[in-house]
Structures are given as C-alpha cells and as structure tokens.
Length: 445
Image (tube, rainbow, N blue to C red; front, side, top):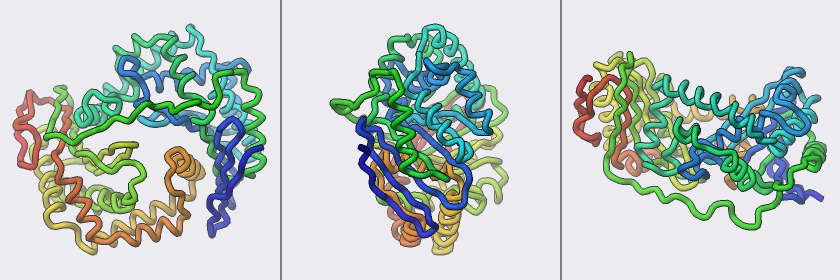
C-alpha cells in the first residue's frame, strides 16, 4: 500500500500529492484546474557527474538507448504510441539527473505512463543497438562542436571545475564514446536506475490515486530484476570544488564571432538565498533592461547576444556571463563586462533596479504556472533534491522580501571571487590571464 501525503494546496485549486510505493518509487502529482493535458516525467537521480572519467558520456548514451526498444515495443512503436495521440515524447540528461518525459491529452495519460515506465525499466541494450547509436551520438557531439555558442559553455565548465565530473561534458567526447563498452552501459543502468532513485512526476488534469495505481501496474509488468531498492547510498562521496586563482582557456578557431563566458562559482542547490540570486542575475543580465544588455548592446553596439545566468549543483554552482561579438570587439566587451561587475560589487544596485527585477522574476514565475511541463519539472526537482515546495503566493512573497542589501551582499560574496574565462574565436592567445584588471589584451590569430 502506497503511503500518500498532501504537500500543497494552492489558492487556484491546484493540489500536490506524493506517494511512495512499496518498491521505493516516488509518485508526485499536481492537479492543475482548467487544463485538458498532462505532462509526465520519470526522473532518475543520476546524471553525467555519476560517471567514471573513462566512461564520460555513459548517462547520455544510456538515455538514447532506452528509446531503442523494450521486450514489448520496438523503437518505432515507442514513438508511434505517443505521437499517434498527438503527444510528444523525449528525454534529456543533465549533470545530476536524467528525465524521460511526455505530454499528452489527459485521456491518454494511462498510455503515457505505460510507455515511459516500459522505456525506463525494460531497456534491452542490445549490442546491435549500442553500436548503431554510437554513430548518432558522435554526430551529436560533432553538431555541438560546430556550434561555438553552445560549446563555449562546456569549455567554461571545464575551465572552472577542471578534470572533475562537473567539468566534463555531458555528451562525453568522441574518444570516450568510441571506447564505451556494452558492459559499462549495463553496469551504469543497473547501478543507478533503481527504484528509490526514480521519481514519477505528473502535472495537469490528473487524479493522484489513479495515477499511483497506473504507475504500480506499469512497473509490476516490468521483467527487469535490477529495479529494486538500493541497500546503500549510490554515491560514495561528493566532489569538493574549491575556488582557486583566476584561470582562462582559449579554443582557437576561424569563427565569424568570438564567443566568451566569464564567471565564477555560484550558489549550491538548496541555498535559501536563491530568490536573491534570481534578482542579482536579472539585474546584471536578465533581459533588455539589464545592466549588461544596456551597456554592451544598447549603448555601445558591441554584441547582439549578452546575458547572465546561474546554475546550481549539490556542492557547487556557476554564476556566468555569456557574450557573442565580432572578434575585433572582444577586448571592449570584456572591458565593459568587468567594469559592470566591479561597479556592482563596489556600488551595489539601485532601488529602481530592485523593483524592476522583482517584477520580472514574479511575472516569469506566474507565467510559468501556465505550462504543465514547467509544473511537472518543479515538483520533480523539489522531490529529487529535497527542496521546499512553495505555492505561487509564497514564492512571490519570498521575492518581495529580497532587499537591496541582500543583493549587494551576494554580489560582494560571489562576484569578488577570481574569475574564470573561456573564449572561442580567431585568436593566438589570451594575455594576461583574466582577473579584475580590464582591459584584457587579445592577440589575433
């Protein structure tokens, strides 16, 4: 008998409930009034940072393979089952989790539950499928390699975190993908795809009790014997990331644009100051009214795209700035960005900036509630990472509680740290190493 608990009852009529099956699988749903669809995701508490260095890319490789067929369905039948009712099915791998998801009409939710549970728990992982998909993943790596605006973020993570699990690319490298064996993929599947590492999250027009029954039924029909409760923690320890001196990296390419990411370590997952962090990121580079957009693009015309972003992990985080510009303008872009960071640290933000950023963050929060996929993701991550699940009103209240002094203190804490810099473009070298000494001199290749 599943143990069920109501987690949240929203003033809009939404209802979040959670059940833990006897197997350890967690089922969490959010009933959303007034919608006729449902988004379901099966989240696995394992991602690329759980790989061994020699098996970099295994988590993402496995994600591909789970769609290649089960004992009940071929790859075509998996896709056709969802698409024939007008739904979408897909998956993604991150540093710390993997998600298999679908969005369907509410009437087709039983089908989506059955298909996704089948996909996640009954992958065949045949040698033929593994060898066939190897070429597909190598093509995906090549595609990213041809997109410097995407690749520079992988390069930045490697620069900031070094040769650690957080620093390695999620897709792996051509070298590691060629070397991955069927046995290493099967071992990853058996080790991490265990029942108490799975969260089934559903948001939309869903009845919780019925969803629990459907998930239990779908999982009971799985012939896999490895899907069981883990006897011990899946992770022996966490990577301890330390902030070091300023570092930089350059990928010399004959590109039409220079692509740059500069930044430092940010908040860890679960930090109570995440709403302050959202305000800080918004003020600095979160839209057309942000400091970076105005200073870099509007006032000087130095770049088309410039923004700030943050990302949190279990034991570390990233606070970064991205810009893409004509190669001859990179010196100026870096100069302006560093000056904006220094001004933010030294002088803080204005009350008008705080009010504008609060409105932006709150508006984005409310608008996000109109998407069942976003709601599904929110409740799943709350469950996976044991984070407090707040109703919309509480989120808005937390945002309103952020003060200028809070943002300024966070800016001093994080943005005074040494910076890491990654550049892709037609340059011979970067000199001197990045720090808080603008401008940075760039030598053209």
